[in-house]
Every structure is written in C-alpha cells, then in structure tokens.
Amino acid sequence: MALNKDTYSHHISQQFNDELEDVKSRLLEMGGQAEKQLGDSIHALIEADSALAELVCEKDRKVNRMELDIDEECRRILARRQPAASDLRLVMAISKATTDLERVGDESKRIARLAIQLSETGEAPKGYVEVRHISEKVRQMMHQALDAFARFDVDLALEVAKADKDVDIEYASAIRELITYMMEDPRSIGRVINVIWALRSLERVGDHARNIAEQVIYLVKGTDVRHISYEQMEAKAQS
Image (cartoon, rainbow, N blue to C red; front, side, top):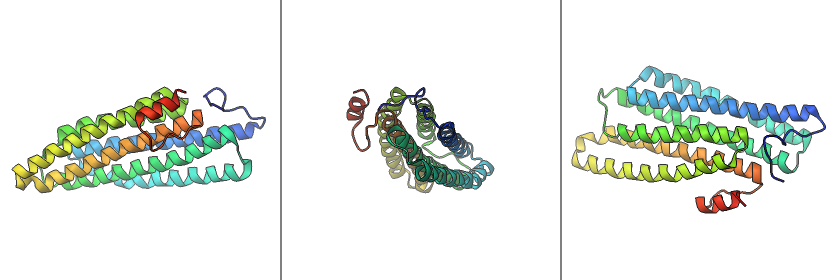
C-alpha cells in the first residue's frame, strides 16, 4: 500500500500514532543538527575558522547520541507494536535514515579536522572554489532529502537522486584538476591533498542524502530502489 502524509496516522490506538509521529520528529530534529554541523564545517574550512571547527568536532557527540536514542525507540516500537506493511516501512526507513545522518556528522567532523590543519598553513589552497560549489549542492541535497521525508514526497526524493549524479561528475572533474595542479607545483601537495579529502567527504554526504531519498521512495511506494541507476529508480518510483 502506498503511503502519504495524510494517511500514515490511521491507527485505532492514538498512542501508536503519537509514537510514530514522535520518532519521525526525532529523525527530522537529528537531520537539522546534521545539516548545521555540515554547514559549520564547510564555513570553518573556507574561512580558516579553527574555533568553529573545534566546536563541530565537539558537537558530533550530540548527533551520535541522537542516533542511539532513535534506534532504541525504533526497536521498542517493533517489539511492542509489531507493525506491518506501511508502518513497518516507516520504522525501518527511519532507522536506516538515522544511520546516514550519523555518517553525515562523521564526514562533517572530518571536514572540520581538515579545516584545523589547513588554517595552520595561513594560506587558502587551490580547490576552494570547487569546495564552495560542491558544498552548496550537497547541502541543498541534504535539505531536500529531509524535506522529502517530512512530506513523503517521492518527486523531491527523485530530485535528490538526480542531483547526486551531478555531484559525482563535478567531484571527478575537480579531483582531476587538483591532481594536475599538484603535478605542476609539488610544493602544494600537502595542502591540496587536504582539500581533496574534504571534497571526498562532501561527495559522501551527497551519497548519504541520496540514501535518505531512496528510503523515502521505499517508504511511500514499498519499492526498494537501492543499487540501481537513476533511470531505473525513476521508472519504479513513478509506476
């Protein structure tokens, strides 16, 4: 059975409705925290703000704690309610999405650590234009993926998956350019490698946003769209 925002709270037990709404709200709260961590880590990197970067690293524990709390609540719902059909999909989708959000927090922490290292050089290295551009795209993907989850919006989830393809292409192009630059100026290798690692983390954030979007499609349509091309995903989501 397909699911939408108006029909998922349909149980005789109001308490069950409340439990599902609460755990979904917790997921979105965790998503907001992960978004902030990502934005702060990127700002710290580009502005050489080591104090902000340190704060990102410290706050990663909060995202980890939220993941554990949500997982515990999902397990409790599964044990007590034994949900079926769309209810089961909702709980499973939330559980998997929290894992991706926790990993977004991890990638933000990695970017923050790189920001600290790069701030010590006192020089903005080659590649910051690419960081700015790709970071804007993955931040938008994250926001849209969470919005799609909040609204059970399959079309918006598909937009996220499509954007991930574009990010992968831009990432590959940026890496080729930076490798060429290092070959031309070996003195830049240390600094530029750190930028490459930051870009790699951003590319992974895009992957996690796509994963969340895939969970939205699974939740609404009951169709597993992992590990397939965007074109195949689109066909399944719109069938």
